[in-house]
Image 1 (cartoon, rainbow, N blue to C red):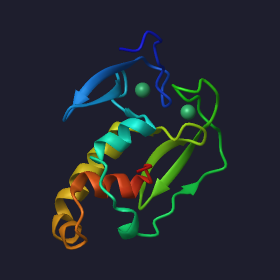
Image 2 (image 1 turned 60 degrees about the horizontal axis):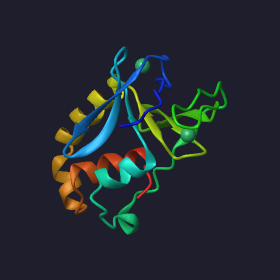
Image 3 (image 1 turned 90 degrees about the horizontal axis):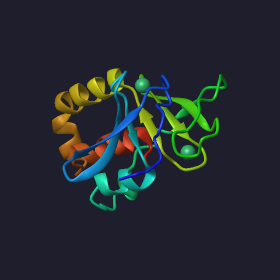
Image 4 (image 1 turned 45 degrees about the horizontal axis):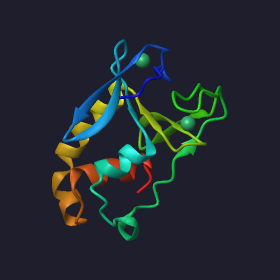
Length: 136
Ligand SMILES: [Zn+2]
Ligand SMILES: [Zn+2]
């Protein structure tokens, strides 16, 4: 357990630790966004070597206001968008803040694109991580 509380990059609410498939993640009590630490994202992917299969879906960074990173405690999180899915990413620690609406959209899309994802030899987790440009 962390002894330091973390604040949501989206709304400033308190992040609560929870476990998803054995991986410790943090969810905002207020807006339900999920924070992935870089190392948590790595674990989420079960260490799969998917680098060679990654589409060139480079995230576009918006110039507007940076948000405070829950880990770095500096305004290092910037808005990204990939294929219509909005999220924040910390340029320093690689952590990723995914708003609740984006999580829903990702889940729905992964279900709809299941066949295509399988054709690429990816699991849904890998596909989601690839889309968000999570480190692996
Ligand atoms: Zn929040
Ligand atoms: Zn950070």
